[in-house]
Image (cartoon, rainbow, N blue to C red; front, side, top):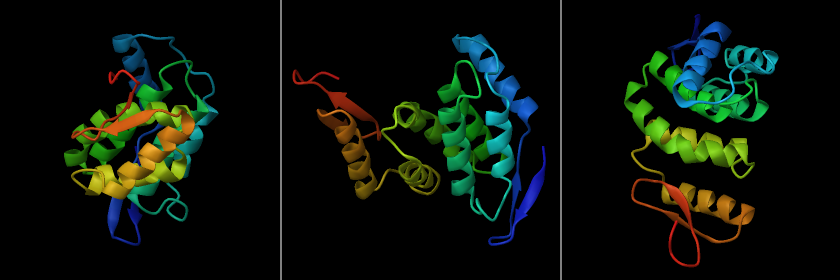
Amino acid sequence: MGNRTDEHQGLRFFYFDVTHAVEVHDWIIEVSGGLSGVKDLHHLESPLAHIQNDDYYPHITDKLTHLVFAINKHHAFNDGNKRSSIALGAYFLELNGYDYAVRRFVHRMENIAVYVADNVIDKALLHEVVTSLIYEDDYAECLKLALINAIAQASPGTEHVDGGGWITRVDSTGSG
């Protein structure tokens, strides 16, 4: 684990290494099931190195978005990439003093991670979601509308954002 100083805000960021990421993934697979093993270690090493580049990823939201997106989309593991992206993102938040946001992040990212994997939510929209989860109590109305629009374009139907910020599909019978 290493650390760096964010020149722009005077914040010190802490990072974890590939070994820790693989251990977290292995634990997830052991507890929740799935195919164990690493498919392509480079797809894990790369985002972990990239987020340490403050020129490209100067803020916690930039770093966290890239970390979650890359682990989710680039399939470093044989299975559990979405689960690992959420767990490692939550750990990165906790490691950097954003403990207050971890529970909400894990809860809300369950559905978001699926939409990212399915190419419904792109990296820019994920960045908006991550920013909201860190700095706001609930998604802003414009973010809710952007999420609904992205989901509706991917699969026409009726989408609904409930009071907890969950985005669900409602079929023609009214059930989810």
